[in-house]
Length: 267
Image (cartoon, rainbow, N blue to C red; front, side, top):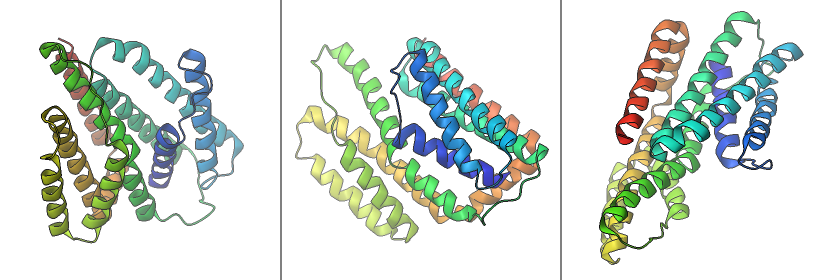
């Protein structure tokens, strides 16, 4: 069910990144509490499409438990065995996979009548905008820390600080807006202006900033293209639910690829 998938995905992005709660700490207790918070948020968004208590508890809290198990797999198995950005990608893909699977089961085995009319295009665009901010910021930070940590170990340099995360969030948000308005020339001018700005920095900082900027601009442009072509993405999502077997195979192939990348980096 597309409405359930989009609402649960939006709840995941907001809860996992914007309102990430770790009151119980980083141990198993904290992961379980984090999963419970996700489960409660999933129940709240599912209230928009069903009022059945059994469905809310089964699918909402069930997805929260799955979220906690994936996080524990990520923290206690993947992270200690390789670079953090590849384990982060595997973790997020597993979350996406579980949300898709739960949404499919929700649509197949329950009769759902949405309480309000849900604008799928608006929800999708909001998800893409949100994903271009904090989740992307986390990914860029992990990429920089892993890449330059390896380089620093080889060159025996001292620790270096990575800055620009906040300005990067606003930068990507502005790029998404420009892409949506089809001001492609302004995006190119921004890249040129940023390049001139980087020339004024010390050589050590310039390399880090250039690397982060390239990744940040790529994510911003991709997010903007997604917002601009939301209709085509929705058609793909609809097809994924209509052709469940093909979608499952695609999810599995991407997951295997990400795991192979993780193993290669940890060779």
